[in-house]
Image (cartoon, rainbow, N blue to C red; front, side):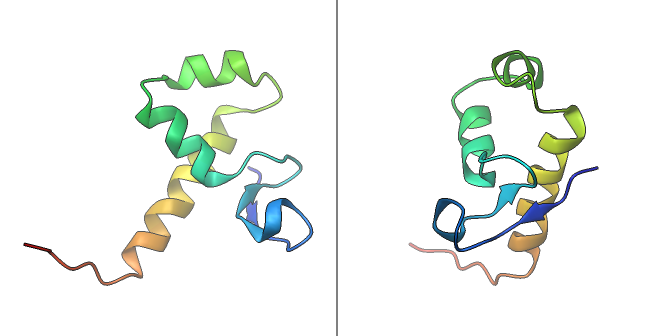
Length: 72
């Protein structure tokens, strides 16, 4: 499974799927726009299911380590 890396020389340091220029935020945006896993894999054939899952898992880990507040 590819890992998520952040390199200041690649997309200004945004976390990306290793070996690509596809950043984690973009993967999440594709899902939020209604694309399915299959849609993403068709659109980006160089990605594997495990790459997308790595991006999602990275996001989960980031959120777990952040304290979230409820705004009223």
